[in-house]
Amino acid sequence: MPMTPLMTSAVMHFGEMGNRWGFNRTVGQMLALIVLSEAPVSAQEIADDLNISRGNVSMGLKELQSWRLVKPHLVPGERKDFFIPAGSVWELANRVFEERRKREIDPTLSLLRDLLLDAPANTGDSQAQRKLTEIHDLLEAATSWSEELQALGPDKLQTLMKLGAGVGRMLELKDKLLPGKSSSN
Amino acid sequence: MPMTPLMTSAVMHFGEMGNRWGFNRTVGQMLALIVLSEAPVSAQEIADDLNISRGNVSMGLKELQSWRLVKPHLVPGERKDFFIPAGSVWELANRVFEERRKREIDPTLSLLRDLLLDAPANTGDSQAQRKLTEIHDLLEAATSWSEELQALGPDKLQTLMKLGAGVGRMLELKDKLLPGKSSSN
DNA sequence: ATAAACTTTCAGTAATTTCTGAAAGTTTAT
DNA sequence: ATAAACTTTCAGAAATTACTGAAAGTTTAT
Image (cartoon, rainbow over all chains, first blue to last red; front, side, top):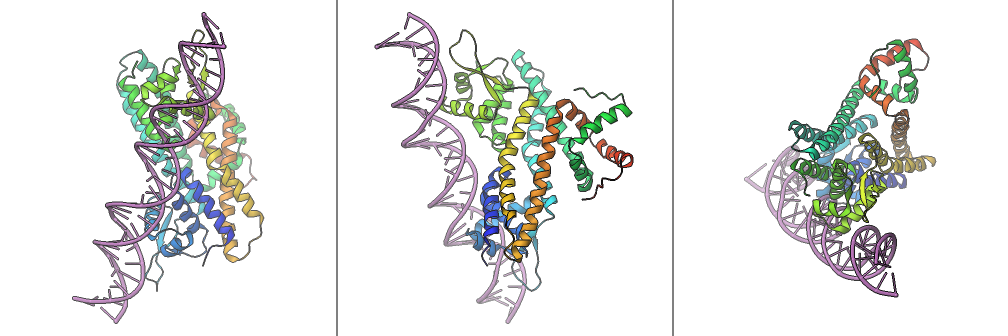
């Protein structure tokens, strides 16, 4: 069966956004289709609904699986493969976040570590190294913070997010209760 | 003068990562070059150092300025334009973050709001709408949290990041001191 | 007003990414 | 062992994105 207008607009939009989120148009569409569908979706249905080649679907599914966003779902009597989302919306969002960190930050962090090992060869380089150190420290702090937050688990994280700006007030409170650990950069 | 090997590897790397960070290779290289340079850099120097056409430099600078990552810097006796970073590394990182949010999240949020206004036409749609609601709420929470965090300013944010997982303990503490506001999802 | 030193724009080309479809591969049933 | 129903792979085509360089624009100096 073809998609409803609601599904169609959502799927198209996720396709457009796909680029920005790290995968391509059709992969984005496929993800949306699988997530929004009531029932498990077969590769052939995806190709039909999105009007793309069967081969493209196969590659897209491979990519979505490598991101751990969808997984195969064996339907007893059926011979073909069906696919379903690999977790709740929350989990999927986390996976995208994490995967992007791996692709966008980790390689840079590792290069920076290497570049900062060598002593600067001249004054231009030492200015550059100062900047690179700043970048390195920032990325490292962001990475480890995001790891720690993820480790908190969804419920605590959600409490924290609901707390919002309140976290600022909490910090002050804590500074008063447990002075010592400075808060300046 | 040509770049030192240190600068060259950093610049090349930032170029490669450029794609992933939302701009293209040469724009990434240009940003790195400007940030790492000791002195303000002219458009012509950029073209020479990176071996790209003068026209490309002009478009790249326009884009970097639209992201508010670099800004022109008038050197008294000189006729040509020079460019410098539009702030500290911290500020630049914030701008990239913010700008990407605008491009990657805001349009989706606005589409989702629209799609959720209409009543579902059938059961497939109501399942889809439930999922879309989840996505909407998640993106909205993430957006407003990130806005609130940015509003805290660098120093408090840094304290918070240093606190790391300690924030979990803090939440428990707070639950004991100020019970009532539940923490379940 | 002219020229010199610079900048931007943009049509066309080049590079890269994505997609197709036919061929080869796999699994299950008979 | 053969065939039917499916899947994956991958070379080449199509679509998209990035880059060049020449022409047009701007500013400053004379």
